[in-house]
Length: 210
Ligand code: OGA
Ligand code: NI
Image 1 (cartoon, rainbow, N blue to C red):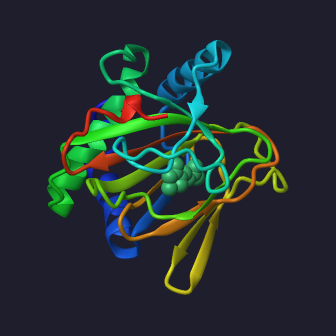
Image 2 (image 1 turned 90 degrees about the vertical axis):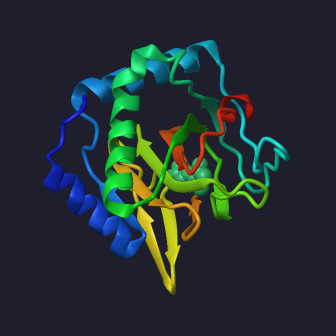
């Protein structure tokens, strides 16, 4: 999927990210790639490989259900060849950010996330105090037919503003991990996403986190 978007399109998105610290892009993944990711999600739900998510880095990965109650399944570039189109899109984004934002990103870690009914993630920052190499957060929602009232909106806090983003299928939200606090409001229905971080250095250990 390399070269799916024009250079000008990438520059517009990256300019928006640089100016406002976040950008939201609708219909981001090509149909074929979205399909690959949704197939992977269905398979992993069936075999029940999702685990309760933690709130720290691998050095200090506490489970704290009063802060966060979603479940995650960590992805692996080598193992998960059936979503290679997805990883290629991520690599292309990294290449553009390095070129236009001088960011020196050199790795990434992604998981599938499942917020069952009644779950949430309270206001937080994505970078850890003991491992601060998460530079950019990237979320793509996988909720076909999300409706108002279903909950699970992402709220981004920026200065005095609270920006609410509905988790619509194939909407991609990219933001600066160390700048923007955000939260996931209580979901009233199953809510799915592929979520991850572009790293200053590869950690290679995300997949052993819960
Ligand atoms: C996270 C997170 C937001 C979302 O996983 O750190 O904030 O909308 N996710 O799923
Ligand atoms: Ni977060």
